[in-house]
Amino acid sequence: MQPIFDSELLAWRRRRALARAAPGADFLMARAADELGERLAAVQRIFAKAAALFCVTPAARDAVLASGKAQHVLRVEADAAFLGDDEGVVGMPGHIPLDPQSVDLAVSLLSLHDENDVLGMLIQIRRALRPDGLFLGTMLGGGTLGELRESLLAAEMELLGGASPRVSPFADVRDGGALLQRAGFALPVADVDTLTVRYASPWQLLADLRAMGAANALLARLRRPATRGFFARADEIYRQRFSDPDGRVRATFSFVWLSGWAPDSSQPKPLKPGSANVSLAKILGEAGGGKGPS
Image (cartoon, rainbow, N blue to C red):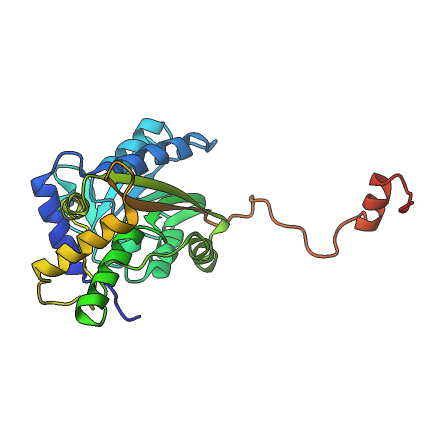
């Protein structure tokens, strides 16, 4: 598969973001971790061994432990710097260093959208789960940073007569469900949660993205720096199209939540076509009292 993202640049930017630790820049991860805890609370299971996959911070592990659904959570990260003093293992980009059927619960927060092969990662996660093990994760999805994408595109078309990729592509919720099915998960579910954040200016949004380590890491990005005039025009367009009456601008983040179970014979299965004992015509006839239209 042709890679889309510069994995080394992503890791470098995340290391820099962690080292600087700008206050409040982790608001997306904090929201995802809170939601993870709520979703785990609805699962009527206790998992013997869990893994938090490429979440960069301890937030996912802490959410799992706080939920009481697992007493041991192994962190898997792409760089030892992300682990700090925590127990964990380091995996190469695109590779999950877990043995087959070695964990009962796998969680992933806000990392899959930066993977070059999302399907391949999901297949590895399913293989690492024991039968009837659960995967629960979220990635940024379609609509995320749509305002920024449109403003940058419009400014570039106006000033340069062309466009280059400046905002990552994001899968939508239907793509997420299809990927779970293709990866072999049983009982796959995908849903979306949308967050709108308001900023005093687009510059504050860009500062937050840099503080998250989430600036443009596309391999096809322009390597020469954009001019001050370009960003000034993009700022004008952003304010014109996406500002509220009080002058603040909007930025959209869509969380696509994915869940699926490793197949197991104990799980409910759909009935085979033609296996019903009562015909639909009979049910409809009984519901209508056996009478036709008058």
